[in-house]
Amino acid sequence: MNAALCVAVTAAACAAAPAMAECWAPLAGDGQVIFTARQAGAAFRGRFSSFTGEVCIGEPSRVRVAVRTASVDTRLPELDEALRGPEFFDVRRWPRASFESDAVKALGGGRYEVAGRLTIRDVTRSLAVPFTLRPEAGAGRARLEAHMKLLRLDYGVGTGQWADTRWLDDAVELSIALTMQRATAPQ
Image (cartoon, rainbow, N blue to C red; front, side):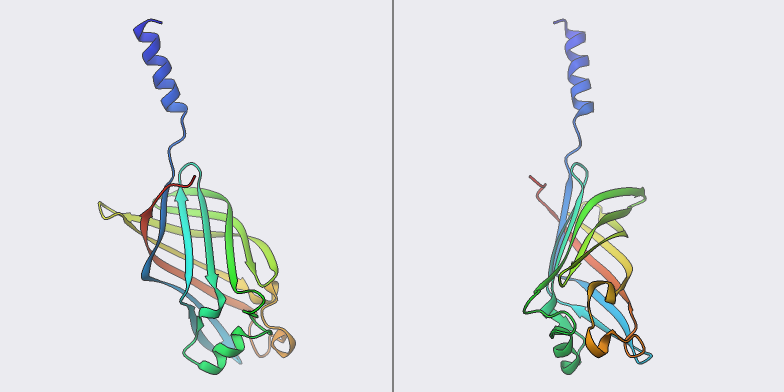
């Protein structure tokens, strides 16, 4: 094989090879998964303090998140116990909520949209979530932010008297803000 053909074949093979994914994981202690809901017209906030995740951009792109539902914290012990109970998250039967991506679409400027499946309790639904992922130059870290609205009754959260939206609104705002650290690429 002549040298020019060898260089052309090598260049074509490199151009056809997919770029390895760049993966990120939450930096422990530097992030928030916050929800806002309304009960009897008054807003209240809470957070989940225990979660794991992985965001990979490239080949293959993927997003995975798992939240330990028992880590719910509204700073109101009675409300926290109710949210952990069978009418809401039922943490004994379903100790985690999870999201698994089907596709990640780059929108430019560090903006993405991930389509996937969210599972809360025993209900799985498809949804698309916009998010930003902005690496810090030379730091091995990135900032991830996402905001979405969920309908709690779509996932069976709030049964019995709590299914009545006059007492507890169906819509729940979810905000995620995390510092991510570079992780190993997926296998």
